[in-house]
Image (cartoon, rainbow, N blue to C red):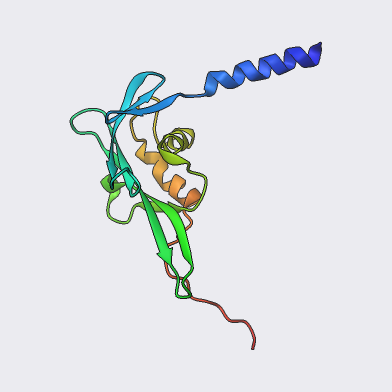
Length: 147
C-alpha cells in the first residue's frame, strides 16, 4: 500500500515540471501561451532554425545542423548553437542529445539559458558553453606516442 501511494506521488510530481512545447506558424508555444518566435532554414528546416524573444527588439539563438568531414572521409554530424548578440565567437557544438526543436528549447530552459517568460539569460551562457561545448569543428593535432 505504501509503495502504491509513493508511486502515485512520484508520477504526479513529475507532471508538475513538464512543459508542453509546440511550434506553430512561426511561434513557439509553451503550455499553450506564446513563448518565442522561430524561423527555419532550408527547405523543411533541415539546415537549422532560429528562436527569438518576443517583442520588436528580441534577441536570438541560432541552432544549425553541421557536418564535419575528416581527411579519411569519415563524417560527423553535430549541432552548432550560436549566440549572435554576444559576438562572433560565442557558440557551442554538441553531437548528441538534442532531438529536434522541442528538445532544443527544453534543453535551454533546463540549463537556465531561457527563463520561463522566454528571455535569454546571458549571465548563464558562459558556464553553459564551458560545460557542454565539444569543439567539434576545431582541427585536432594528432599526438603520436612512440614508434
